[in-house]
Length: 269
Image 1 (spheres, rainbow, N blue to C red):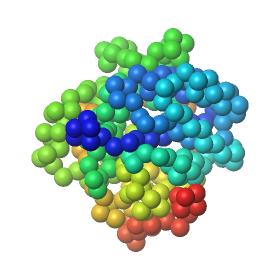
Image 2: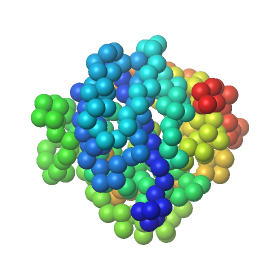
Image 3: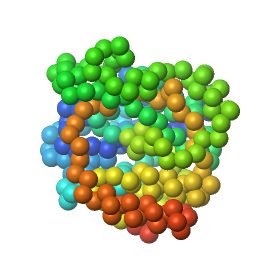
Image 4: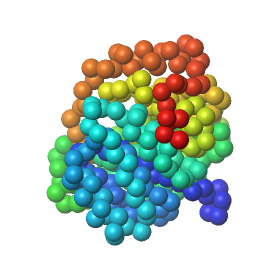
C-alpha cells in the first residue's frame, strides 16, 4: 500500500489502573515512524492517576489523545472497547493494551498489511517479571531480543517482505494466536457485526467471539507473522472465574454462525 493511500487510523489502548505501564506505552507510540491519527484510551475505571497522566501527555504529544472512561464495576473490557471504538474517528482501528510497548514500525506494519474485507491478528513478545521491573524503573521501551528476560523471541523478528511472500501462499484462517491486545480491523466491518458482545464480562474470550462473527460475516484474516512487533510487560493473571460462561457465548456464535450480537456497539453510536 502506498504511503498516500494509508487510511486514517485510531489507536485504541485499553487500560486499568497501571499508569506506569501506560506511560511507557505512550512513549513507544510517540516514537512511531508513522503515528496514528488519534489515540483513544479505553479506560475500564482507573483512578485519578491515569487521568492526570493523560492530561500531561495531551499537552506534549502531537497526536490527539481522547480519554474514554467508565466507572469501575468489574472487568468490562468488551463494554469499554465498544465505547472507545464508537468514539473513534479513524476508518481503521488498531487495538492494543496499555501494558504493551510497540516497535517503532508497529503502526505502519498494520496499515501496510491492511486490506478491504480483512482483519489482522498479531502476536507478542513476553517480558518476564524482572525485565518488566527494569523497564518501568528505567523508562525503557525499546529492546534487544538477545537480552535476558525476553520470551517468545521469534515473535520479535520483523521482516514484512518475507511475511507478505508467505501470506501470498496461504489462506489465513482460524482462532489460533488471536489476542485482542494486538489486532486491527476496519471500523465499518466492526460496526457491521455490532462490535464486542457485552454478554462477555470478566477476563477472556471477547476477542475470540468477535472474530468468529467477523468470519461468519465473510471478513478474512491477513497473515501477520514477522510484523507488528510488541513487547508485553509482565503482570499477574486476571481472575478467570467467568471463563466457562464466556465460552458458552463463544460456542453459541460458532454453532449458530452468528454475525450480530444484541448487546454491542450500537448502544453508543
